[in-house]
Image (tube, rainbow, N blue to C red; front, side, top):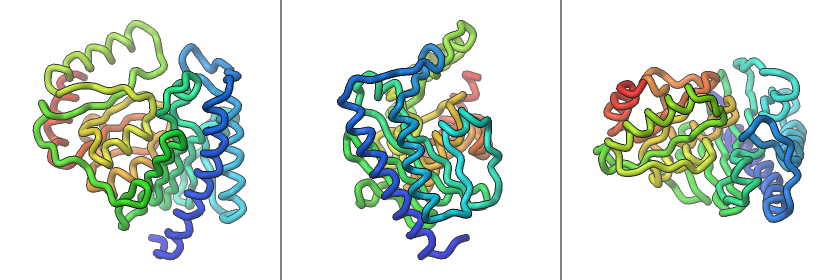
Length: 270
């Protein structure tokens, strides 16, 4: 475990990088978009690439020996292996579809793993000016104020977030909509806000009670948010109830009180 001063330095560097990238996103958000199609629904923008370069350059100057995994570099160079080395895992723009449509749920997600454990997390929504931060053992914060997960213990009073994903084949859509339909009988309502990282932060600050998603892009969607949820007193786990694996493209999150009931209904809908 890195010392406190080191961790504070890592957090400060990540916040600076997120804020720099945030300015670029804020400018791009209000301009006409030039979009390349990366598939029918998954959209990549110039902003995405510019932000990743900016974040990595900022962090590499300070930590030249650290490893880096980013959504854009991985898309270009294939999957990077997650090792025990300190590794920055970055989604320069989570919520690209929202960005293209001018829907204000977009963010930069920066996570640092040490020994494969998410240790520092920063998720910044530059449009709504919300900065979520978490450091292992130090708590979670929204714009500097401490946050904690909800204390909801009844499914019927829970707000659930999930995502439709990017695949549009009938089998995938039937499975995901059937699952949502069966969950709607058990919970208060469902939200699809279009950003995995911001959904995790919603759990951390108690706006959302339950979240699950399968088949999202990769570890960059969850590395930052996972720290923030845990530090806010929440749990991050596999939808099966097993331990969370940052590389598995499967995640669920909630407060500890509702986990067992949530996993049970998720298992019924497998």
